[in-house]
Image 1 (cartoon, helix red, strand yellow):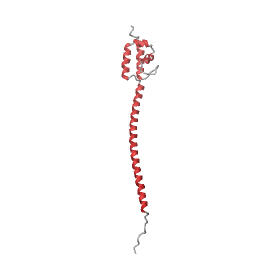
Image 2 (cartoon, one colour):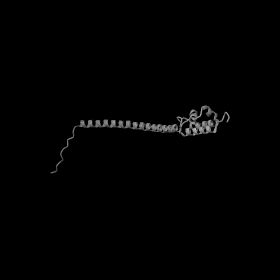
Image 3 (cartoon, helix red, strand yellow):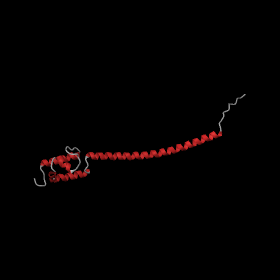
Length: 137
């Protein structure tokens, strides 16, 4: 074992910790995909982890692919994106419904005005008296 390698047990612990973190099942940390969590999850020191160059290279490659987000964070972000899209659609629907409501209110107001004017015109003409039917002799 030279200065750039670690024992098989340490390598196994680091790889196991890496798999748990990437799978979103940490046992000793909060699950964030950072090197601090890798060595703590593996139960080794930072210096020991730093000597495991091949494992760190693999860690860097695999966390770069995930954007350094845990599966829970990825799931949360996907749900947030879905909710934001639904909210945008609901806002668009609301705006359209408000536009239609304003148009309906305008039509109702115009009809009310016409109805009032017609009633006033009828009232000015006087009342209609119904005469009895003509009787034939």
